[in-house]
Image (cartoon, rainbow over all chains, first blue to last red; front, top):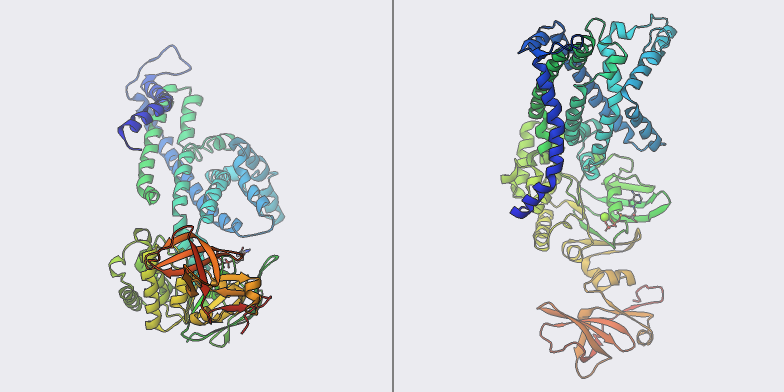
Length: 290
Length: 333
Ligand SMILES: Nc1ncnc2c1ncn2[C@@H]1O[C@H](COP(=O)(O)OP(=O)(O)OP(=O)(O)O)[C@@H](O)[C@H]1O
Ligand SMILES: [Mg+2]
C-alpha cells in the first residue's frame, strides 16, 4: 500500500473531504478573527471600524475574565473526576452477570439521549428546586432546611447536572474496555493469589488506562464548551459565580451586543483550548501510543 | 508434596453434563497427561482442580486435605494457560514477581527468586521487557517462570505449547520434561498432541465425553488399550479396525491392527488390496490401501518400497499384535 501510485491515488480520493473540512473550519475561524479586530456593536451597526487590539484588551481586563477561566477549569475537572470514577464504578457493577442486565444497561445509558437544555430544566425544576424539587422534599422529610442549590452552590449544581449527562458516555466506553479484558489474565491473577482489590489495581486499572484517556480527551473537548446547562439554570450567576468562558463570550456578544468583543473572546477561548489540548496530549496522550 | 485425589467429581453447565463422575488418583511427583478429543472436558477438569470452576458434586483432595471449597490461591497450585495470560503492562520481572508480591514477600527475597527462575529459564536478558516484545517461546517461559517461583505443590498446564511452531514445540517439550526432572513436582498437563502425551507422561488419562476411558503408562495404553476408543485414540496413524468375517475368524467382533504391525508383500498375504495414497516421510512410508471387502487400511512400511499408486499388494497382520474387541467395544484379554 505504500507505492507512489497508491499514495497519489489516496491523496486524490481524500482531497474533496479534506477541502470541505478545511473550508468549513477556516471560514468561520477567519471571520471570527476578522471581527475580533473590528469595532462592531449591534446597537450602532453603522459605525464599524478597525479596532486594533482594543477588543482583546477589553475582554482580558473584564473583571469576570479570570473568574470565568477558573470556573471553566473547575467545571471540566469536576465533571471529569465524577464521570471517570463513577463510570468505572458503574461499569464494574453492570459487568457483573445480574438479572435483567440488558434493561439495566439501557437505563444506565439513557441520560445520554436527553438533550442538554431538557436535562438541565428537569434538574432545575424537578430535582434541585428549593420549593418543589425532590431534594427539597427529602430535606424536609429529615426536618432540614431545603437547599437552594442554584443560589448557594451554582457551579457545583451545574457540575452535577453535566456529570449526570456524561456519566453514560464514560460508563459505555469503560464497560467495553472492561469486557475486552482477557478472562485468562483474571484467572491467572486469581491463581497468583491476588484478591479482588489487587486484581483491580494491578490488572483492571492498567487495562482501562487507554479507555480512561479517551474519555478524558473527548469529554474535555465538549466540556470546555458547556453552555446550554448554564443558560437555562443559573444564567451565569449569581454574579459571575457560574459563568465559564463560553458563557462569558455569549454575555459579551449577545447581552452586550458587542460582536467584536465576543469574537475576541472566541479567539482567546480557541487559544486556551489549544493550550489545554497540548497539555492533555502530553500528559495522557502517550497512553494511546501503546 | 502434591498428591491429588478426585472423588466422584462431576460438573454440569446448566443442562449440559460435561463431566458425569470422575475418580482419579494422582501421586506426588507424577507427570500426568490428560488427552482426549476436543470438547471432552479436559480443560474443565483441569479448571476444577485449579478451583477456577466450582464442582457440581464430589470432592477434591490435595495431600489428603479437602480443598473442594477453597479459593484457587489457597490450593497451592500454579497454572500455565494456553494464551500464557501474562500481564501485558508489566515487565517480565514484574510478571514473574507478581505471585510473590501478592504473597507479601520482602523485596530482596522476591528479587532473588525471580532471578533464579530467570536463570533456569534463560530469561535473564529479557527481564526488563514487556511480554509484547517477546517471542512465543519466551512468553511461554515467562508463564512457566511465574508458576515456578511460587513453589506450588503441583503445576497445571492447559495445552501450553499449542500456539508454538513444531520445532519450538519440540524444544519446549524437552524443557518442561527437564523441569519436571529437576523440580520433581506433580504436573498435570492437558494436550491433544499424541507425541506430547506419549513422550512426557508418567501416566496418561484418556478422556471421552467427560469420562475416563483408561489410565495407564504410555506403553500400557499402546500395548493393551482397554477399549476401541483408547485403541483408536492412542497411536499415530490410527489403528486399523476390521469387522465382519475377518474379525470373527479371530473370535472377536472387531479386530484392530496398528499400521506398524502390518507386513506388506507384493506376492502373497492375508488381505489383498490396491495402493491408494502413499505418504513418503523419508524414514517411513504410510500406505493407504483399499483392501478388498474390508475398506481402507493404513500400513507403515520402510522408506524405499517400490510400490506406486494402483499397484496390487498383500497385507498380513503380525500374529500376536492383533487387538481383539467384543461387540461392546471392550478388549478381549
Ligand atoms: N462455561 C461453560 N458453559 C457451558 N458449557 C461449557 C463451558 N465451558 C465448557 N463448556 C462445555 O464443556 C465441554 C468441555 O469443554 P472443555 O473446554 O473442557 O473441552 P476440552 O476438552 O478442553 O476441549 P479442547 O481440546 O477443544 O480444549 C464442551 O462441550 C463445552 O462446550
Ligand atoms: Mg481445552
